Image (cartoon, rainbow, N blue to C red; front, side):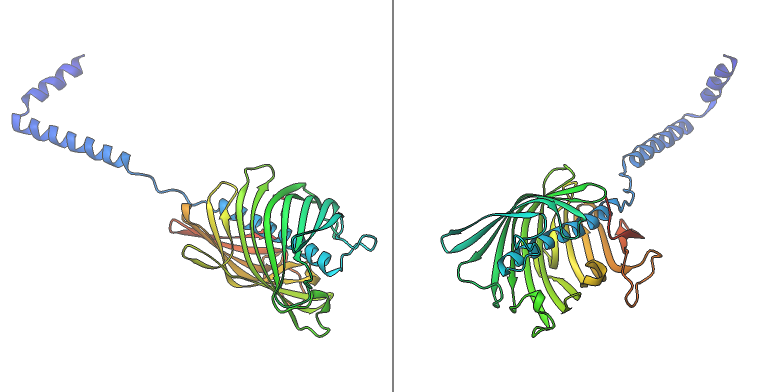
Length: 324
């Protein structure tokens, strides 16, 4: 109590002019503190979304490729099931004609030929009547209905619904490489909806130019993008990721796959952008388990992801095959 009385006496002794100055200083300090508090904090960088997207994009392309290869085998009569002449784990339910188009109805309920995925669902394969898949410019349309692919082990699933088209640009089939054909070029475009492990369906577009070379048993595949959306070009894929954010995946350098390495990406570069969160990443393929570039006949196991966001950046190495 005595301290309070002393303090009040001291304040009364301060000249009136000084009191005004003292109050102005206090008011300015309060206003400054209030303004500083209202300033938005700079968001912390987070590369998690682009890490997940890179895995998902690789998986979507891989699963769509497998369905397209199956379709090509059916219309070319080179299916791998000797008894049914259809893809592994599938049944040819029916073949019928709609107007001028032949439709093959496949039902999946079994393991793929590599026995590392279990597939279910229905796929319709369509080709114009009296059209040979061997001819330049021939194309196949496929429609996927609840086409579910579950990777083993891990039981991580993906359900695809939608439509795709593949054009045989220069004719021939992959099986004839090294026997009169030096390259087989396929042009693949797709508009699909993908469900990842029970999440909400997400829109996905694919636009891929695929060039096969080599010979059976030692094939190589080089993939480039030809899609355009907004200000982006050379797109391999675009759409919305698991969380609903729009993304764009451009080609930096041709992505190269090798049959001898289980069709894993051996080299190449992709650029992924998620504009909403100002996140951009460069994906470079062709690294081993020690995070070193592969050489010679060595097969890759990892890829490098270099990300940039809010003026910060980082590099991480991720496995090519993931159960996430």
